[in-house]
Image 1: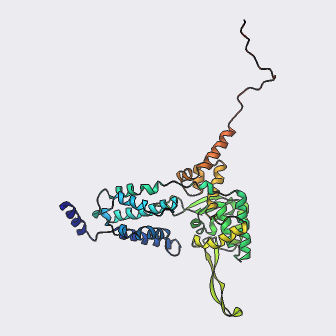
Image 2: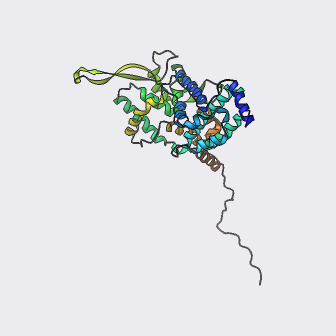
Length: 363
């Protein structure tokens, strides 16, 4: 007891004792600032997850950071809502780990030497939740074409001026994340080489070795993008969309109507939510199909063509480990096809239909 109080006094002497809440709020502020710097609007995804599942837990939030144990973290994970998807739990645990490790670094002088180990041990349960088999979410090529055709129809009907169609087409052709595509510039279209230079994602830690990922696309995609290239500077955003504002309509008793205000780059995946549902309705596909299915489909398509896993991972700006973890069935199918192609007949063909018979033993 005396040693515990002495330790508490030594920690307090170094400054205000941090809590889980203060550490997490510091991390949220940093994530929100990065989100805004990248052109995002509102709160970051990490903000929403941590506010809902950490800051709302008053007992956990009030815990003094240096007293945190692996058992307390495991208890927090086991108390998460039962309806949370495994992928959501993994993202939440990754956010929590980043926040807590940041706190360890910022308050190292006040923290016990084994705190980082406690954090790692406590959050392992959440990280090890069963991975989603994403190859099951991939769509047949025929459905991809239906989505693109429907996007063209919705684009024309709702006067998108080709903006919606081009976004959906490029998503389908590259399998890139929305956050990458909204940063494409005019110069990233290398028409002569039939490829797009897709900006690297900002996921992961540290500085990436490359700024762009070369992705081959068909000549049909290049032709569809030409109107977005005409008479524009190389550094301008490639994919744009109209924004609207409400104003009173004198011809309709002053009721509000939406009018175009300005045209600029896409800034958030949520901007695609409403038109995406209209596209699915037009294509006759279930409303449960999400835009990310276009990425899954691109990855599975390349795997089924027997492209090396490392190459598929590089083209989609992810790791071979992630591909192997989430698209195992597609890899097995491709390897099975390759193995089947290597099978050759081994039994010699016979020119007669007479099978040799063993001589019968005498007597």
